Image (cartoon, rainbow, N blue to C red):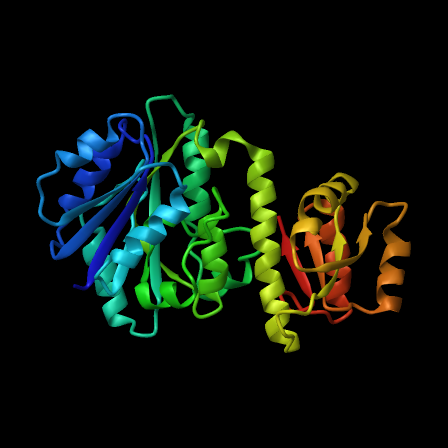
Length: 333
């Protein structure tokens, strides 16, 4: 078996039929489709049990564990060399599997590939401006080197558009089920250290924008998870660059606005394996003092620069002094 498609679904009755049909109607037909029902309480179980196609395998879980846990379960059972993720709200274009397999076959060093996406609305209306914003973000034509360089600041890869190596996925430990929202970003941080994904410059995936989804409904929780995943990824880069053992905690400095410093101090620092030596607010009052103080003390293991105007100006000064992005300086959201 070359390809396994895996979907995790929780209470997905509204869009599940469209999702399944988009996979079963692929031009590439030699695949298995594993769907993990995450303890749904709506008609999801009934709909899945009614699927007659022999390529479909359904796993029903008795309670809700979260998407990351379910995807791990499905991928562990998969027989394919390549895993195509299909989110339950979305749809794949008819040629998606065929074109992604063709790409991976002709690029033997690749461990994964994504594609352009088309934003679509659900039953609740979504503005054309919002749909376009998502498309513009995911459809930027970037080399894999550019995707890699920007990985801690943003992600240009849509989760459901990806096909990746099962062997690499399992070697890295799969999705982290502690993350309920940004489990994909956490996985990409680890995968990209082996090889970033290229992007097929063609719409092969239809990404549904749902205002009440987990990723859109609670910005503070999304931000917290994202910073936790990002700092874990940066910590691993520092470990590798410095040759540290994993029982040693890197020393870092956080540069951000006052509010962002407070958020990091309260919500992130207690949960990450890093020692924050100082928080620097690069306001007009503190900018010069903080910059000189930082240079006098040395960089320690890294500087985390959160993305705002003053912090970015501060970062440019550090780069001008010879510090390197993603080695000494890490720009984060």
